[in-house]
Amino acid sequence: MKIAVCVKQVVSREWQLRVDESNTWIRDQDASYELNEPDAYALEEALRLKERHGGEVVVCSAGPARVSQVVREALARGADRALLVEDDRLVGADAFATASALAAALKDERCDLVLTGLQSDDSGFAQTGVVLAETLGLPHATIIMEVQVADGALRVKRELEGGWFQWIAMPMPAVLTIQSGINQLRYATLKGIMAAKKKDVKKVAAPDLAPQHEIVRLYFPEKAKATRLIDGAPADAAKELVRLLRDEARVIS
Image 1 (cartoon, helix red, strand yellow):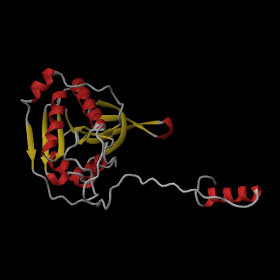
Image 2 (cartoon, one colour; image 1 turned 180 degrees about the vertical axis):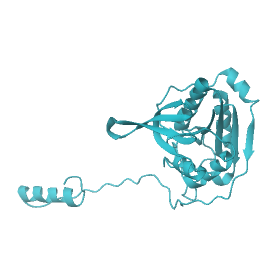
Image 3 (cartoon, rainbow, N blue to C red; image 1 turned 135 degrees about the horizontal axis):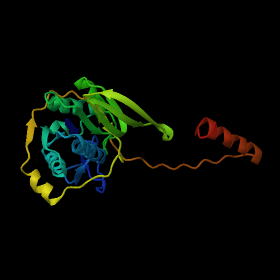
Image 4 (cartoon, rainbow, N blue to C red; image 1 turned 120 degrees about the vertical axis):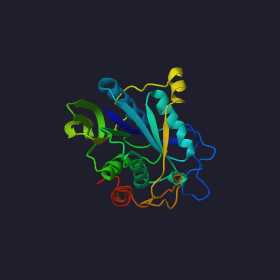
């Protein structure tokens, strides 16, 4: 059983974000980076499936040269080999461009499963896995909380709203986006870190990238405070307050 896991490098949650000079992305030259947490859960689920059913786990990532850091971390945790699409144009790329790059790396791998995290900790669009499935021409399911494999078919548990869950049967190959908390994460051991240095990391050329969205302006929420006084008798002022809350603030109906 061959399982591919798509991982992303994101800015560490402890780092204080700064907007760059163009006001279109964060200033990342002096940032610290880490493995996207939802992708870590996808990697852990892949490793557990390998332990139960055998096979290999191939980690795949796309981005600038620094992305090799999280690729090596995934190899240290237990992945067998890696595919890396290295291209500076993928910094801040949208889901379509990222999925196109990942699909280019995975198209000849013939994986039984492709796992991604539900969303990234930076942009949080939750679209890359779905677009990747469409690009590869594979069925997909999202927000997965449990994966069962038997007789070449899948049975997966999806998280719905309001505390409900849904079990669905799927064919393989397929793409699944994994929900955080599906399992207990493992961390790299010293033995795993040493072994990762000898594992193969294959660099794949990026395809023609055609982003489908443009960030016009990125900024921190602007704080504003305004006080409005309502004149008149108490009864009339109360009626006017209710009208303002309903028609302008829209906090009551």
